[in-house]
Picture 1: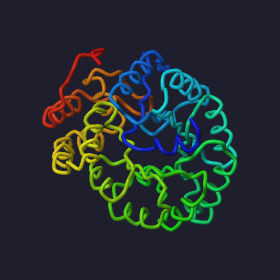
Picture 2: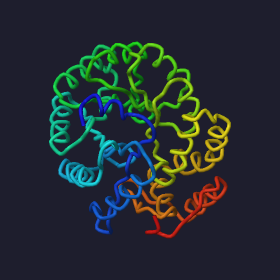
Picture 3: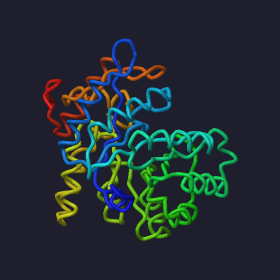
Picture 4: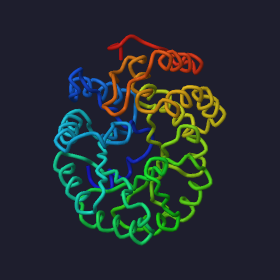
Length: 308
């Protein structure tokens, strides 16, 4: 796809694919491929490989590149393969991004550097993203998730970066609707904002967001595609009701249990989740029962593994 086509397809629902591991703790590529094939059939806009839900901080570079190669062999236009390539230094980020592009990534999702967070002021972040964007041959998306990084990018900083021809958009995961609106008001009209919080998805679309990257799309991608379709058809009440129906699962699975909860929910819905990589722990029996109950309350059908 051309750069223009890639940017035009940054819309709708993206699955930040989880990373299945086998009993030896190694990546289970067969399970990863199985999940991706199932997600792509649900009408998603694309897949994020090496995002937060994929436990990227716990993967080696070799593992990251193997996942990208496996994904590229499956994902076909117009659905997009977006690679998470943000690392702590600007040169490291550029180097990994180039490796990802060489393996077929359509776009790059670049996390804010955060280790020296006290010094990650607007000037530093602006220079970092401008340098990365200048160096690459694919569009980049800024990845802001302050609940993990502690970095709160200012709307004015994002607004200035949105005018760079190679910075195509932003994944905004704070869940703060007012902050999202401030970003949209200051950004270039063609800048694509994708939200990371399913609790404000419909509100974000109404404010001008292009879509969402949602961890719980790993277990109910078709439901969020349906919400997006309702919105595009102007059926706002149906979109809101469906979003509200899913809230019990979002709060118990995603917010309370995190990665382990999402992976277990994926198992319950017929995908391949499994245990997270240490130091993360799998759910305890009581937590598993809680997740199953929350999904039942949200009217999410549970299916045998392998049925998708």
